[in-house]
Amino acid sequence: MFKPRAAAPARRRDAAERPRRSGPITGPQHRRRYVITMSVLVLAALGLTFGIMTWDNPAETGSRPWWLIVDMRRDSLITIAVVALCHAVATVAFQTAVNNRILTPGIMGFGSLYTAIQTGAVFLLGAGGSAALVGVGPFLLQMVAMVLLATLLYTWLLSGKFSNIHIMLLVGVVIGGVLGSLSNFMQRMLTPSEFDVLTARLFGNISNARADYLPYAIPLVLVAVVLIWLRANSLNVLALGRNTAQNLGLNHQRELIIVMALVSLLVAVATALVGPMMFLGFLSATLAYQFGDTYSHRMLFPMAALFGYTILAASYFVLRHIWDAGGAVTVIVELIGGLVFLIVLMRKGRL
Image 1 (spheres, one colour):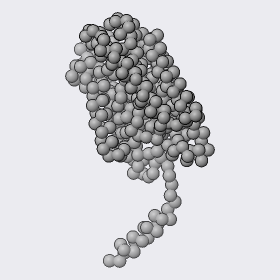
Image 2: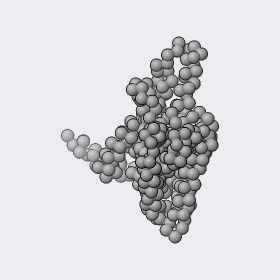
Image 3: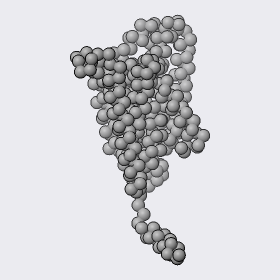
């Protein structure tokens, strides 16, 4: 009768005497949940990859035409992987740098600049202007323009007399609004046929990317991701806030500028490849925070990237092979991402 009552204080004493620890994994149950989530994501990613490559292939299985179609679909899968990796890693790093899990790098006006470039080309050159922006040269020019805009913004507003990240975000919102208004003005003066051509370019579409872009995009993305990965410990400290990070010996301003420059490179590559995607990074990062439940960026990055790949591949598979609606994956990604964003806002940043 008395044994359970006597055991309770003993258990509390044992728990109090047990050494407390703070780590990316807090216990066996946490580790098991992380491993199960990653395993499910890997299986889902492999299943979607196999489905996209083989679903509804009209040629005889194993024949040369069958393999030619598989090779063509392989380029779309590589594009999906590159875009998902860019948005997932960039959003997690950006949210850590600005210490806010609602904002995304899109707030800095990358999407608005892409829209302004595409609209300006059609406005100045006509419907053929859109075709003039297809190719390795225009792809690299768009990417360089976005990286230059972001780098100038970061170095000016984070190292000058302002040195305030909130002012930098506000300036990014204003620049995005100005570019958006300029694009709207030019779009109103286009003919219906020119507007149709432009609209097709402004949707985030896997088909916008061409295979000859990938040899330039992949090395840039890998270098940026590796550099961010190597700074994972600095990001863990950066997440504690400016004062705490400085007290721990971190050069907060320098780390912030480096992280922002790498984030701008990743977002610029993804936007120049397929067009703007507002909620892909937000959705990937939010799900990684929810299921990973850890502060360690070396555990968050792979989970966020797998979530991004799974979401993007599933959207592409449904639109391309089920609804036969092409590769405008923005339709599904923005719908689901917008709903999750509202849920996060309604719950004050907590799921």
